Amino acid sequence: MDTDPVATQLRFPDLSEGARPLTVTYGYDKEGDRLWISFVDKPIPAYSFVVDDYIAVRIDLETNEVVGIEFERFTARAVAKHPELIPLLPITTGAQRKLKMRKKQRASETEAVRAIVGRLTPALA
Image (tube, rainbow, N blue to C red; front, top):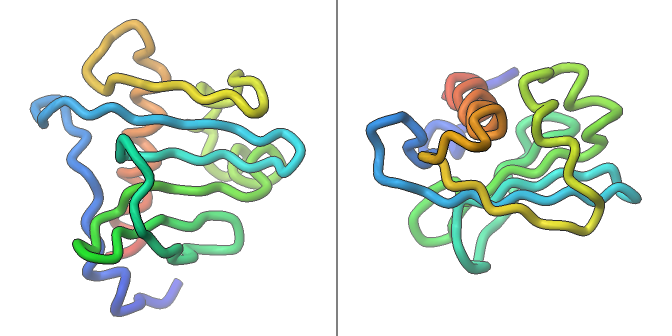
């Protein structure tokens, strides 16, 4: 993957254990086989930066901070290439789930979000 100048300026949210608490919302559209993850509480103006043929990051227009990730062909491609995302799959289509990144009750989901952000960060640098 060639490095894009936009990609080198992206800032992902800090999801490490010691970071400030963050609520992540995610949802799945079964008909479109699309999973989305949002790092913001309400919609904000953003654009999509395509990472590869099935992953795009949503970027805040003003701050260049990553505010979300979208996976097209989620079960067909993304889960096969990124099995750490499997804990996010059981959500029903059209539903949304809020995930407190510091709560232990959904540790597998929390780790799935951390893992994909961790894998995307060096890939974009």
